[in-house]
Length: 204
Image 1 (spheres, helix red, strand yellow):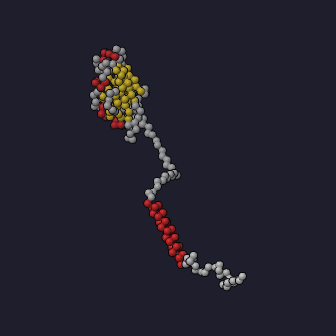
Image 2: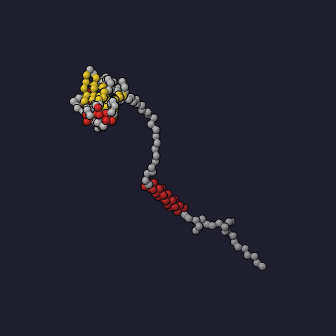
Image 3: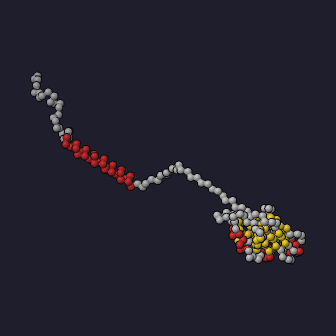
C-alpha cells in the first residue's frame, strides 16, 4: 500500500482567506452610509421643529399680586336740620265747611339760604323749592325776624272729609347731601266732629 504525500503550502494558508475577499466591503463604502444617516437625522429634526411651529399657542393662566395698597378717607357731610321756629298751627272749621290750613314754622341753618330749602307735602309730586312758595297760594312761605312760616291751604290740603296731611322742610348741601326732615302732621276729624290737631317732628 502506497502512501501519497501531498505538498503543503505556507503554514496556515489553507485556513486563511485572502485579503479583499468577496465577504468584505471596500472601506470607501462607509462614507456614503454615514452621509445618509446624517441626512435622515437632519430631516427628522426639521420635521419636529416645523410641527412645533404650526401648533397654535396654548392658553395659560397668569396670577399676580400687586404689593401696592391704596388708602383713602371718606367723610360723610353732616347737613343740619332746619331749626325749630315755633309751634305748628292747624285750622279746621265746624264740619270742615270753612277754610282749613296747616302751618309749619322753621329757620334756616347757619350758612344756608332759602334757595337751599325744599318743601314737601302730602300729595306733592316731589319736593318744591322754598323760593317758589314765596308767592304761592295753596302753598305759601313768608319770613319775619328770621322765622319762616310755610302754610298749606285750600285744594292742596283737601281735608273736607277728614284726613291726615303732612308738611315738611329740608335743606340741600351743594354736594347733594340733604339734611334730616322737619315735619308737621295735621289731623282733621271726620266731618269736623272734634278738634283738629297738629304734631311737629322733631318737637323742638
